[in-house]
Every structure is written in C-alpha cells, then in structure tokens.
Length: 95
Image (cartoon, rainbow, N blue to C red; front, top):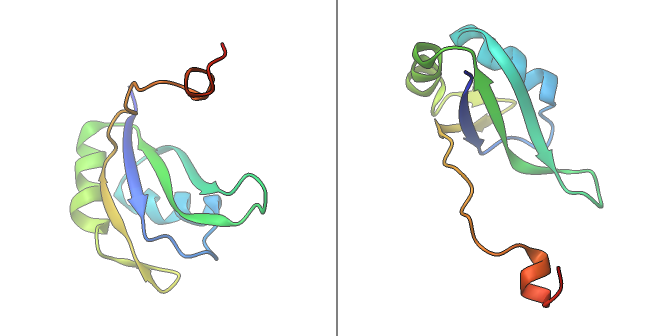
C-alpha cells in the first residue's frame, strides 16, 4: 500500500516529473501529481506524492519538509483523507 503525502508551497514552475524526481531521493515514488486549475491549467501550488513504504514517507517528511524546490520551500506532511461532506449534487438540490 502506498503512503500519500501532501506537498504545499510548490512553485508554479514545478512539473509533476520534477516533483517525482525530487521525492525520489527519499525512496521509491509510486506517483506524484502537481494539482492544476481545470480552466487555466496553471499549478495551484500544491500536490500529492505517494511513497511505496511507510518508512520512505516518514523519511520524505523529515528530510524534505522545508527544503527548496524551484526556489520555494516545500511543506511536506502526511495527507489527510477527504472530508465526507455533501457533494455538489447535494448542495444544488439534485442527484
């Protein structure tokens, strides 16, 4: 099972591949994703990385939190599950 990390403070110039390469120094990266705006395609300044093993995820948090990538200090922490609130259809009154 992969161990998902939240990465904040990502430069608008950082690519998904660059994020993957940066985290590879802490261990095996299962996936990396820079989150982008669906309309402009521009980075939203955060992303997620999945490490293969828990000790690699712990190492990534300890060693990479606060380190610079593309001129920006990253905030690296364990990802929290999405809140199970109502979806868009519930808010708009349709399903």
